[in-house]
Length: 296
Image 1 (tube, one colour):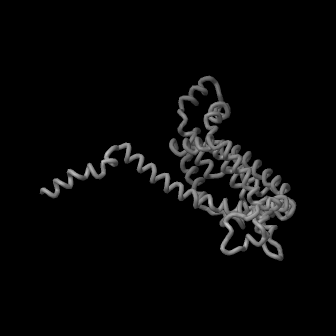
Image 2 (tube, one colour; image 1 turned 30 degrees about the horizontal axis):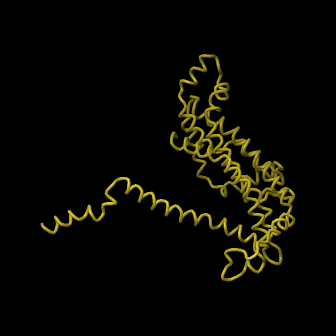
Image 3 (cartoon, one colour; image 1 turned 120 degrees about the vertical axis):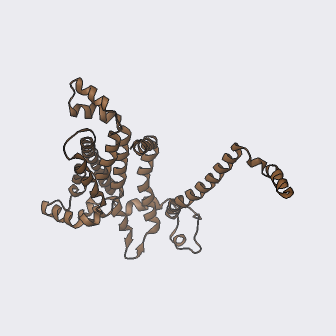
């Protein structure tokens, strides 16, 4: 009993700095920062290695042990990479496909989601579940049937197979917008109907302004998906002048090997538009993710 009493008496004195709630929270915050910093370094390292490789010489690329920092940065790799492939043509093609896809996705998904969320019609929930179940189908399952359909339509070798399907909605984005529409009070729609506003008027004047963060999130997801898409353009774009930048990067591989430093320089330049877009829109993007995640 005496030993236990001494132990209890000395414990607060030995760990006194942990006794207060503020000290414990400070320790937990410090540990969390250390873990997050370590994870961040793991995720940032591939990007650093890409930029560092883009500034290396041929000998430094294959040097062992690896050169973590280029001895003499070779900035001339960047203009050489831009001349090695028609970089700006491929970037223009990529932007055309991505922007048209964003327009198609926003136009179709907003209307379909509004119909599932705000309009009452027989079998609505059953149709929605059936529509949502198409999410389970991977692209590889529908790839061959879609190619046959587009070939019979004469669309292979054009941008149509990559853009037109976006005007028919995406189940994931429809689900995202439907959940957001359902959080808007019905009293707003009822008041608009009493004032003589039709469904399209309610959709355009009330729903669209209130769902801007969610729409922006859908637009950004669609843009990034089309910007980095590889398999779709590889299947449907048969003319090299129509290639996107994802296909163009493979041209750095020739009969003498792979031009690693030039390919990394082109890859670094390719990453800049999404990074700049996210940097200037991250507040709206995070707000849209938060609203659709919490209120859904």
